[in-house]
Image (cartoon, rainbow, N blue to C red; front, side, top):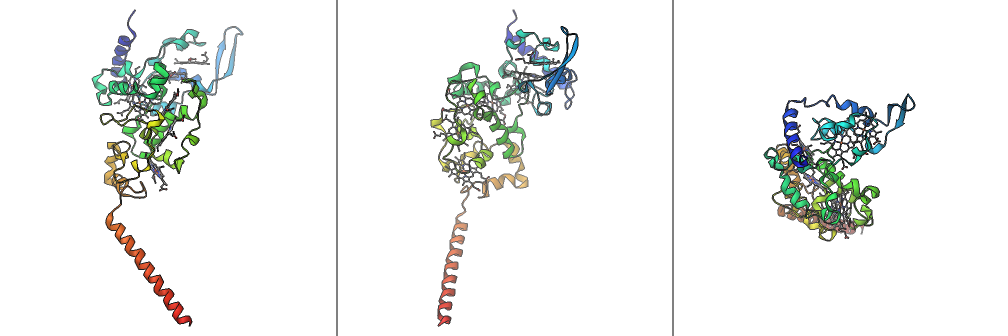
Length: 313
Ligand code: HEC
Ligand code: HEC
Ligand code: HEC
Ligand code: HEC
Ligand code: HEC
Ligand code: HEC
Ligand code: HEC
C-alpha cells in the first residue's frame, strides 16, 4: 500500500498547483453539495426505505460555518481535498468516521514553500508541551487549529486585540468547556475565572494579552511559542509586563504587521502610552513635574487656608 505521508505530500503538491489558479474569493462550487446539509440546522435526503423525501435535525457539532471557512487559510480547498470522496453519497458509509485525517505536518512538513512558518520546529516545541506530555499524540495540532477555520492572526491582523481574541479562542474551546476538555484527559476541570482569581481586571487582561504570553516558554526563533508549560511555570509577576522592559515586546508586540502601523502612531503609543501598559514607560522628567505640581498645590492650599483663618478674625 502507498504510504500515507508520501501520498499526502503528493496531494498537497497538487493542491498548491491547482489552488493557485483557483478563484481566490469564492467558495468552491462543489462544496455546495456538502454545505447544503452541513451549513444548516436541518437537512433533507431521500430515504430509499420509505421511498420519501425526509427532513431531520443536523447535529450542531457537524455544522461548518462558511463565512469562517472563507476567512481561513484553507479557503481555496474543496471539502473532498481533505475528506474522502465517499462523503459525496448520503447516508455516509459508517467506516468513514474512522478515516485518518491529515495533520499540518503531513502537508506542510519539509516544504520549502512554507519555510517561514517553521512547521518542524513548532512540532518539536509542541512535543515538549504539557499537552503532548500528558495527553499523548491524540492531542494533535488540530485540537487548537481547526483546519476549517484557522486564520494566521499573528501575521495578518493589524490590531493587538484581534490577535489576542483569535489566539485565546483556541484555548477556550477546551478550557472553558468541560466536555471538550474531558475528551483529552481524566483530570478534573477547573473554572478559569477561579484559577486566575489573583489577577485583577481579569476580563481586561484576557482581552489584552494572550494565554500563551503567560503560559508558554518564550522562544526567540519562533513567531509563536508552542511549548506550553505546567501551571507552576506560568507568569504571575505583574512587573513582567507592567514595567519599562515589558516582556510583551518580545512576544505579543513583536509582529511586523502591528509595528507597520507605527506610522499612524499606534506602535509608539503602545510603548509610550502609560494608559496602555501601566508603568511601561515612566519618564523621569514627568515624575518631577508631577511632584512639583503637587508641591505647588500644597503650598497654594496652605496659603489659602492661612488667609481664610486670618480674615475670619
Ligand atoms: C444529505 C445531507 C448531507 C450531505 C449532502 C453531506 N453530508 Fe456529511 N453528514 C450528514 C449527516 C446527517 C451527518 C451525521 C450523521 C452521519 O454520520 O451519517 C454527516 C456527517 C459527516 C461527517 C462526520 C462524520 C463523523 O461522525 O465523524 C463528515 C466529515 C461529513 N459528513 C463530511 C461531508 C462532506 C465532505 C460532504 C460533501 C462531499 C458531505 N458530508 C455531504 C449529512 C450530509
Ligand atoms: C484542510 C482540510 C479540511 C478541509 C478543506 C475540510 N475539512 Fe472537514 N475536517 C478536517 C479535519 C482534520 C477534521 C477532523 C477534526 C478533528 O477531529 O480534530 C474535519 C472534520 C469535519 C467534520 C466533523 C466535525 C468536526 O468539525 O470535527 C465535518 C462535518 C466536516 N469536517 C465537514 C467539512 C466540510 C463540509 C468541508 C467543506 C466546506 C470540509 N470539512 C473541509 C479537515 C478539513
Ligand atoms: C491536506 C493538506 C493540508 C493540511 C492537512 C493542512 N494544510 Fe495548511 N495549506 C495547505 C495548502 C495546499 C495551502 C495553500 C492554500 C492556498 O494557497 O490557497 C495551505 C495554506 C496554509 C497557510 C497559509 C500559507 C501562506 O503562506 O499563505 C497556513 C498558515 C497553513 N496552511 C497552516 C496550516 C496548519 C496550522 C495546519 C494544521 C492545523 C494545516 N495548515 C493543515 C495544505 C494543508
Ligand atoms: C495548545 C494550542 C496549540 C497547539 C496544540 C498548536 N498550536 Fe499552533 N498556534 C497556536 C496559537 C495560539 C497560535 C497563534 C495564533 C495565530 O496564528 O495568530 C499558533 C500559531 C501557529 C502557526 C503560525 C506561526 C507563524 O509563524 O505565523 C503555525 C504555522 C502553527 N501554529 C502550527 C502548528 C503546528 C504544526 C502544530 C502541531 C505540531 C500546532 N501549531 C499546535 C496554538 C496551538
Ligand atoms: C483540546 C483541548 C485543549 C485545548 C484546545 C487547550 N488545552 Fe490546555 N489542557 C488541556 C488538557 C486535557 C490538559 C491536561 C490536563 C491534565 O491531564 O492534567 C491541559 C493542560 C493545560 C495546562 C497545564 C495545567 C496544569 O495543570 O499545569 C495549561 C497551562 C494549559 N493547558 C493552557 C492552554 C493554553 C494556553 C491553550 C491555548 C494555546 C490550551 N491550553 C489549549 C486541553 C486543552
Ligand atoms: C497574566 C498571566 C496569565 C494569563 C493571561 C493567563 N494565565 Fe492561566 N495561569 C496563570 C498562572 C500564574 C496560573 C497558576 C495559578 C496558580 O497556580 O495559582 C495559571 C493557571 C492556569 C491553568 C491551570 C488550571 C488548574 O487546573 O489549576 C490553566 C489551564 C490556565 N491557566 C489556562 C489559561 C488560559 C486558557 C488562559 C487564556 C484565556 C490563561 N490561562 C491566561 C497565568 C496566566
Ligand atoms: C502578561 C502580561 C501582564 C501581566 C503578567 C499582568 N498584566 Fe496587568 N495588564 C496587562 C495589559 C496588556 C493590560 C491592558 C492595558 C490596557 O489595555 O489598558 C493590563 C491592565 C492592567 C490593569 C488595568 C489598567 C487600566 O488601564 O485600567 C491593572 C490594574 C493591572 N493590569 C494590574 C495587574 C496586576 C496587579 C498584575 C499582577 C497580579 C498584572 N496586571 C499582571 C498585562 C499584564
